[in-house]
Image (cartoon, rainbow over the protein chains, first blue to last red):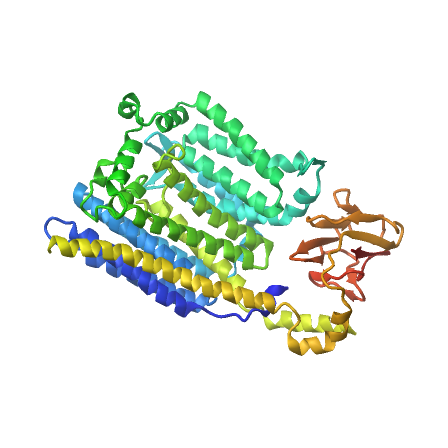
Length: 455
Length: 159
């Protein structure tokens, strides 16, 4: 085993240094956003900066204690993204008179506390594997919750919300974590069967029909979400997650071919028979048609967003000088265009790069860890972050039809923040496992075996 | 605050953002170097090279196994081609190499490629898998010509 002889280094000091830089970015963004207040520097600024820095340092200390060898880059990336998000939301609040930034800050606190609790409680991600099927059940419950009458509510045509005691929450966001854990557990146990059985046609090794069942099930589930909850974004996310994980588990192109085939069939059916999907596609292709712009659920949002991006240009207008508030849902779905308008292409590329670095570190943790379950879990979770970014940023820049997914860590939304911070906690745990020294018992064992082999 | 100062701060923020990214990339680069050094260390470390030196010099340089041949047991003489995918050994019909051996388990062992080598791993079989003389307790690399024994069947990798 190659990993055995890497000298394990705890890189918490590197992390601290990068974290300080990330906090400077977050506070700087908050300061510039606060300056856009017409009555002088907004009083919210100090509070936001202090809370964010305290939370980030708290997380750093938790890592020092319980996950000493975790990846040093993940946390600074996320703190910077979260800080930029809060600043942008606050800047939009100043124009619209909302208090979304305060809520976002509160949820950041809750989410980071949850992430710290996950690190403290789990320590070793492998214990999650024991509960593989329990996580399947939890995923099922989470996904059905919004459909229960009286509990679930419909907002903007999608039935993905649960309202309890005045708080609304998207259980689907948490379902992507529990589903990743289930897929990782299931595939790490059944990989050999899925991988080895089946006949070969040309370069493709086709799986047996009964091994296809989980894939068909995942497909059915996504279609179900599409029909019952009318949420294109989650449907894409769940199916994409499953496809990515089965590909990682088996390294068979045939799964991707079959998966894309199913997506094509599902997509064609949805575009034909489901009004909301049809409207989305229409708003994407004919975005600048005046009729489509003015239609209800038309392309007004996309077009406004693109005008914003164009207005921002290379360097951006600066916080407070653009009009990102003209875009509907500027602080959640469309926050990337708001950032693009005020930070410019240079700023948006930096934000995208932060995501790229984050995802690449997740994949690195998957490569480094020694157990199949951890590999699958880390790659699945990193993939969800990457796919979400692609779907959202691709949507607002009109590369693909716009769907209602959130930009991880940046967009306003408590459920998304909570889920994504828990994902980060899990990635940190897997990376800690990947980099920490192997217990000496294993090493001793290896030396004995080596000697036997030589004798 | 003057317009000029604001503009300077605006640009300063963009620069700051990129400083963060470049610092992260810098830290990453160090991390990649660590990985490289680790890769170099997989060749036997100097201290151990002394007692394995004889064997190491006998090993033909970089010959990749292309087939798995059964050399003893009921199916002696059979061989299967090695591709890039793992091989399941056992009595189960799903196995890549179905063993006709009463002492083998249904899903007995797994032979899989990693890097340029093949590893054998016991899948919790009843009677165990032996590599040379020693019973496997975890995945171990298999060299060309080294004997793998499952029940009464003995097999080895051939180039």
